[in-house]
Amino acid sequence: MGVSFVLDGLELQALNGGPDFHFTEAISLFVKAETQEEIDRLWDRLTEGGEPSRCGWLKDRYGLSWQIVPPVLFELLGDPDPARNGRVMRAMLGMSKLDIAALRAAADG
Image: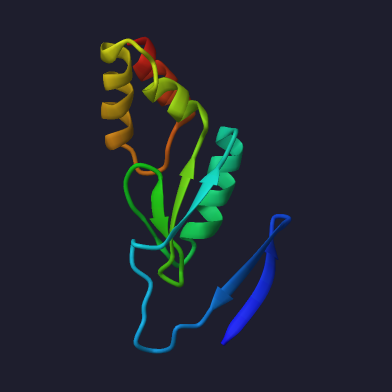
């Protein structure tokens, strides 16, 4: 019913809730990816057999939801200039996999 495993140096534990419980977006894993290369690598591996969604979200082959996000997104969305952070938000909402260069370009107008 339970399993312990290590994912990229982080020890995790999981419990099998049985056949009556399925993954939904109510449970997801959030991953900070510092570089575009890291975003691309994680995105490509996790969407194999899964499906991409919007705003950095995807489902893996098992139906588990993940969000792959660069920390710079929070910096840009937290900009005190409402026009600047609004452009970033609009850009993000139009993306599937997040693109750091495009987010920065949106911020700069």
